[in-house]
Image (cartoon, rainbow, N blue to C red; front, side, top):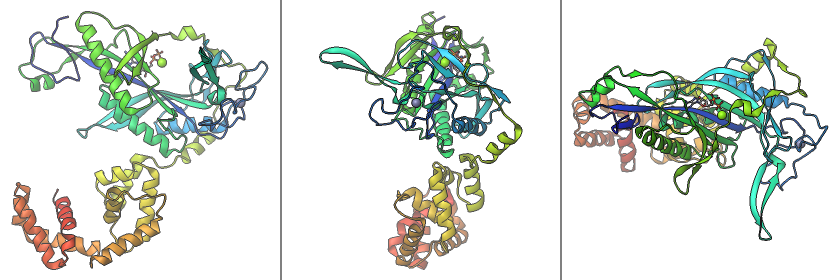
Length: 477
Ligand code: ADP
Ligand code: MG
Ligand code: ZN
């Protein structure tokens, strides 16, 4: 391989003998469910900030003879997440033991799911920055238990490791994508959307800082083979570049990342590190790495284990799960509306723009609040309520919808005109002065001031000038 190798994230440049790489990324995401009790025992699952080892019992401490009893709610929530991700829910599913020896799991194995997970073959559609849509396939969504937490400390001058088992046995969902992601930006967009869906379903806080959502990107680079160097960068983009569709023989997994920003940085770092190795003719090692935020780099942790290292076998203490159609239908019926549905509804019912709708729908509580306000408000356009919510940082927890509506009405009264009336006047002016409109659209700023002036002649309230300018701009965009 020659030196002129670039990663596919780098602009496609015009170079002799050119060859480059595209990044192949698959994500594994762990999410702690906010069920009342743990996955296989009655201990409370809300362990965060609690006194160490205060939420434990013989089951989650792995004491001999203790038997696990699966948490129904956790199973249902995992399936609901799978449904939200368009997965198939096989009629039959089971738990398996994943054996490994590390003191964070007292049993010497983790109850997880191996070859028959609760949910398989899903997909999530994301919108890329250029507006194009892309499907990321979901390989599986399965249920397992979280581990205890190790704390490495120095006690009386001696290096010691402390263990807190409060987290041991908390229900944990793992979502695994196909390696369909091609850049750190795509990964970020996917993760944000997944995070939003999880929050909409109210099955987890998905709080990254508390570790209730943890990210593991898998990254490898694949050579893009090209016979001929392109005449120009744009031609390189257009030319049908032949890609070797096989996956690279190696992959690097970056473990346990607790922020979207770190995940993006870790992926970009790996793309650069691996492309440098490949350009020298070396193959990156298949291994597990960690993100070091201080040093802004990934560092090697261990060489990657294989499935057989875990000696999986079916969990003998838990009967397999067999679904009947009615139960699954009931769960499906109980799915709340998801962000994409809400965005569509906001556009259709309230005539909001895609941009406004996306912001309002970011959080289901804000979307609910918006709809309550609209239903309470008379003479206030939905658009005005959306503007207030988006631009004025309304604290929806401490201001009731009713009070926000009153506040908006008051502010309209103070200005002597309702938004409804103001919008009407502006639309009229825009219709009556097509020349100024076309001047503005071709870049003449003064035409905008002319239109504002014409509206002001009717409104006669100088305090509204900025608002009028904003509305005209928005109407003409
Ligand atoms: P493992 O058994 O090592 O965990 P899997 O095949 O189960 O590996 O895949 C785990 C994750 O790695 C999935 O998200 C998958 O999409 C991704 N993945 C698989 N092969 C590659 C690859 N060559 N490059 C990047 N990601 C990959
Ligand atoms: Mg893995
Ligand atoms: Zn317990």
